[in-house]
Image (cartoon, rainbow, N blue to C red; front, side, top):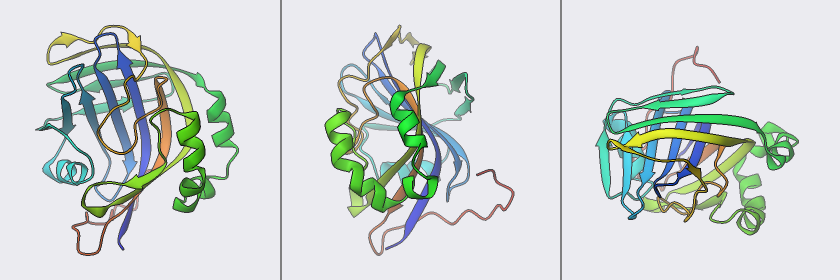
Length: 216
């Protein structure tokens, strides 16, 4: 069964308005580098913001949304903060220090931490320790996903707007997001991750990344 790997970071935050946002900053993938955002409103409406039809098609074949928007989206991420800009969403996140779980993740060799076998092994632990979090599961179209986390930093502040309405202050990701079988941790955070997506035989897959100069 074909498999693709997505190397990057995921920021998951809640807000006082009840809007929860999951932002991906993907550096190396079969689709090239890109940013995307998944937004769930207080009323439960799930919106995908994707930069291209190819990215949108791949993501919505894996997760569940009520609306898919093709928008130019810029995600600038560094150790101090994230800035996310699109016509629908603006977001400034302040990133703090490494969390205790992040220190544990860093102790695992990266090759081991990124493997589907490791994700399968630690899935029961993740479910018990982090509400709503899974490290492996089955998505749409029979796809299997494995999340290999290698680091975790806390998010300490948020400022932003969705559809022109202020999000309000930082809050836990509660209730968990309902885009797929797994949510981000309840505590607002940035996770460094390698996501492995295994597609069922015959399912469409993106073209392999061919740029030899792309950062890892």
